[in-house]
Image (tube, rainbow, N blue to C red; front, side, top):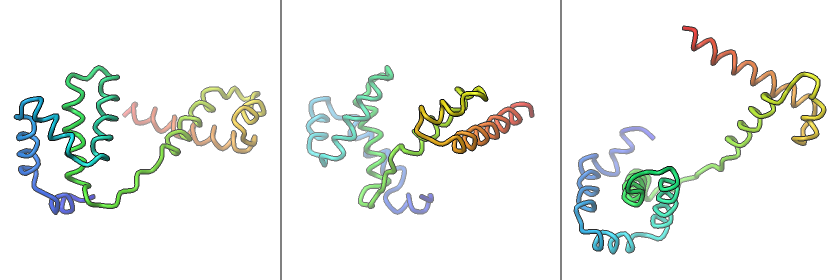
Length: 140
């Protein structure tokens, strides 16, 4: 999304004003206001607060409110497709295969991950190339 598209929803000043108004409310009144927003936004706030709490964040509920309000401000009213984490899971699986690959265990890895030996070789080659690229960037 371009900056021009974001500007169509509201200005950064309007968003900051909205956030500041919510923040300045007494806790009981702020919680009452939050209970009246759409259920989807409430669910997102609960999810974000839970994740922030698990990471030891200070004031996870307030941070979650802030994040969801920003999200709703910029993307509210739009049809938004959120892709699943399939690509992330696949990338992490490939890294595990690369780390476990010892040259002579290709068949075992293929069985373990439900892949063919050729797929294992492709994954190892792809990960080797990525690893080289990362290391070369660190040199310079």
